[in-house]
Image 1 (tube, helix red, strand yellow):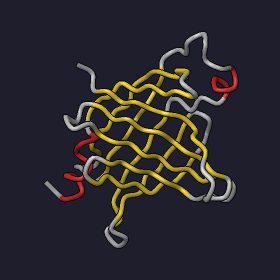
Image 2 (spheres, helix red, strand yellow):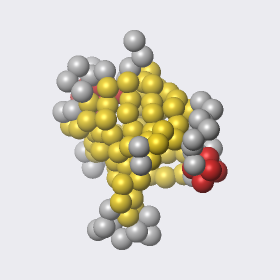
Image 3 (cartoon, helix red, strand yellow):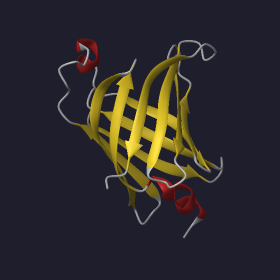
Image 4 (cartoon, one colour):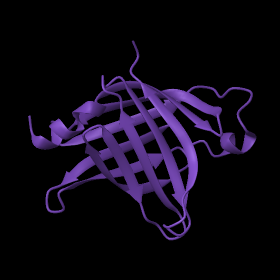
Length: 152
């Protein structure tokens, strides 16, 4: 197994996913990670089920689901890149790292910086994560929290 595949292996498979904003569940769904092109890329797909009645209207109008991302490795930079697309027509490029149990993604874009941090549980069956946003890349605001659980 290549070093790249070994590094991304903890993400492989199907995960139940839940997003919350201010303690309110905004979406429940799933995400999957699968190898493509003989393991040269890792493809992430995600979708959400129907929202609950308590989900804020503004979140419903901006729901990104379904989403597709492709993770690849740049051997000249010695790092991962994630190409993201969603149902709103949003297309973004993120840096990505997975070191030990810590999964990070980030992007710096004029007026809208983002970063993600997730921590895999010791047994590898759950991930506790959050997204943050910033207009200037210095002052960060919590955007939403996420949990991932492997179905049992």
